[in-house]
Length: 467
Ligand code: MG
Image 1 (cartoon, rainbow, N blue to C red):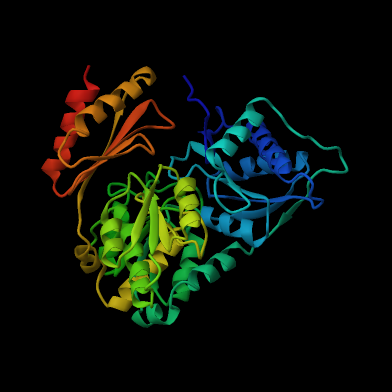
Image 2: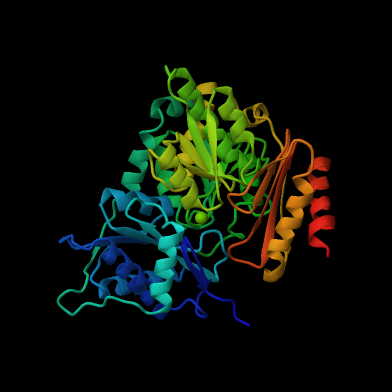
């Protein structure tokens, strides 16, 4: 049986040629455009939406179809071409568009594609608004216009330049360039290679790039996990690089390989970026300000340890990039993101951005004069398990409640109910939540050692999952 089209807060995702077709993309464009027009009632100006795509071969087709849908409801479209997700977010605000669209299925394999939506602030719509767009799509509630009112499509090729300028503004180019870093880069033949190579050239790095043709024919499964980026680990060693960077196809996620060719885990990407940003804050006269970061409940405690050292604070949100970005804006956070290698620096854009991550990590290395393995060694590591268990929809709540009754009784437990349940203990925590996209519960455990982390999983399996 064909998989279902998945619609979440961040957009729509499906299998190309099965459930994700040009008519579906056009209707989704109509629904999004109708939603944006309703939000701007009373304004006389015409609305525009910028649209970009990652490198998948189905991208051109779906971009054209989505743009047609937007034009059909009277929205002008700015075609940014083949660009990254953070690039689109930047251009939404630069061009004062009412919204943005990215044709990407992020880290999913080539068979998939998706249509990601951004509002005028460059962030994915919050839950209620995403639900309204979904309703308009399923009910075919489209504010179609007549022939004289149809939207027009124009092109804009400024995304790379704007993106690079914004990233350069948050670091000191000269300090990095003086180090002449050797960098290995794996862009998985996605949208990241072109702009990232330009950025690294600006930073005076000597780059060995692999999988840097934006063909969308992914050289390995595109999620930047340890197993998937073996070729980058080899490239780091072969080229004696100081660091290796791996991006996912739309370049919002970043994984790091140290100078020995060791994969350091995506959780460290945000921790390292935060270490640099918090250190800068600590050197300023910040007596009256509390520096804040935001991240989701499933992200490592390393960021809390880093923040604590400078009297900072970490805001925890429900899982979902828009939740983190919303909290960052609300609390004026200096850094944020997600443990999947997603660094958000609001000075660049309110979405996860591998380029911002790369620049902040290189700046940290340049200023401290330390190798990446040394910097990682200075951050107190934890042992993390990310697991998922198949649970029928009807039993999900029961599993969550059973877990709560067991774990909340353990010594020192504090419980958060923002998104499923998160249980914090002195040196460990457990987060259990229902997936938004699959009939599974996700369990993330972090503890000071592997046996302790495994013990929590065993407890959940024995007391909540088996019935
Ligand atoms: Mg992505």
